[in-house]
Length: 436
Image 1 (cartoon, one colour):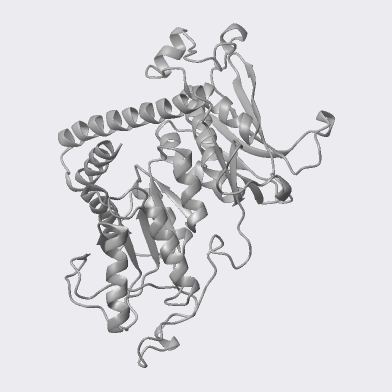
Image 2: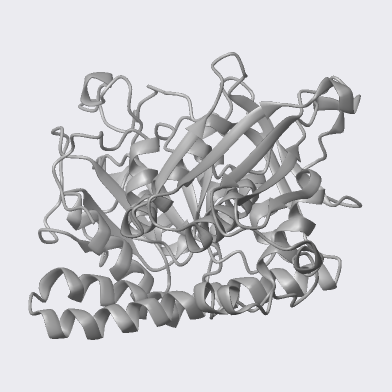
């Protein structure tokens, strides 16, 4: 998906620059078609995994409220284009913490919200609700929650409803063809299979002419059910963030001691940093001059063997006024770090973004080596984000086991990149920089 990712992001960059209406229309058509093709590829990847019994879920301790809010944010522009109102109902008394798969939860919710937006007439309401399970269902007291998406759309006839969760099942009515002409009938089938692994599958209730409600259950997986990171013999892999662990990304103020002039005062007490060689061939925004010990603007380190991926992430960083350095490989980066360490030159980073597959040293081995160096207090702990297209669940399992704190999925969008920077405190909501 890398070539397609480049096409999508370059179109977005050009759209920001081009002002005439005719060119904007052409760019919008190209952008929409590229996005549609990307969604087809993602569906086919999931379809293949499900059919081959290889679909896995990665369960971690997550803030469910945050992820539901993100789903609403991602759908806001589409809803506004159709003059629809999105509503999130999350009772205050419900816990925000749950052990489950954030990425897959969002995948299901975005699919359901997208359908609701397509099939709800302008002026209508769409609701994303989180509820306790009905006690009448006699569910175990395991902390399970019910997620529900409700719309005021055209509804579904009873006979048509039977098609929705079938492979390539599509409603062939004139209304459905008009409102969703590009659907291939895989979305809900995929969501049903994913939901079965997260808790319980999708339940549909629809009244033709009045609207549709689809719900699914999320389990709160318990510690005794957690599996080891290798995931052997299991359909899920769980990573639990213990207090003070790398997964929890705590603050850490240990320092380099290779030279007497490097002191703890050279660090922000609530930030973590990394070194980079002053004489390397690494790409630096603003030139190749060495950066010393003075406190600088937020900065990140991008490691990816694909020039296109480095360019895209660097472009996003520039839009947010974030300093960045780019390296082509994990081994190259380690050499830079070691040279800097020997010379007592310090470069401070807020975050490392690392690709999974690279020629000389991949992202997993790089992360493991960095974690080892951090544990030996060679330099302060720095959070790491894995950059992957999710070509296999094994990649994700290995990334989390190696010390990666979060996954930034390819193809990354500017909104997702900005969200990542917010989550790690690199920028705040008032940070000056570009936006879309």
